[in-house]
Length: 324
Image 1 (cartoon, rainbow, N blue to C red):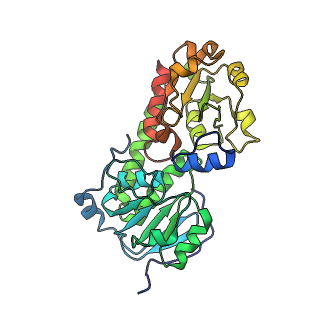
Image 2 (tube, helix red, strand yellow):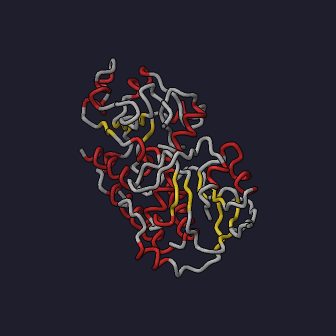
Image 3 (cartoon, one colour):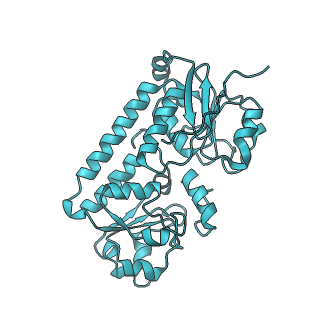
């Protein structure tokens, strides 16, 4: 994970997913925030007791610089669905007091009406958090929370799988669960490696089309999900158009059909009710190899759009599609 200029702070305190037709910049922000390695571990008492021996104070580094936590956080607010999944996976679930309205996994996450897109510092502070985790600095929320003496850890959207591992480890240190975080990272790494190794060699060089919405917004190899396809040796048909669109171009039907992708991954099954059947009904899409040969992966929108530990689930689903 990239290192950022330090800005030391301390925890010592005084007294619905946007439709893909939106503008590309807004689309990117929403998709990265919204939308099972972890089994949705809620961070039971035994895990908390084990990690309670972790040494504090600790200093961790986020996109907003260094933050020093004097004591193990007991009231965490997460405004990032990916961070929420990470926190529960590493056994810090019992320390999570509130999560944003898009943090729908695991099921026992304490969902509130807090928004990660239009965050309100006073509303967040109302939960009396000793740690706030978020993935973007919308409306200057980091400085606003800082002014209220609320310790804040900004973990911006991952651009590679290594970034995911680094964020999991950072949250492990910040919450007093470093060993559990290491275990989660090791498990995810092993599962992804096994998934990649499970596909036949002739997968190398096959082409993939990742669909964010029926308007044919896609994601190229410079994006987080694109990096996963690259691990399988797949070539992304969005790479050319993506250069001028920040990695998230809107493709034309003619372009997709002409590129004849070998694999289609639908990340719009929940938001837009897309499926292998609806894709096959599009004009000329029935001629695409992925459609004709049954390699259309109906992915879970959230799993395909987040960079948490469930990326292992996604990699395994991609592998299964390529095996078939």
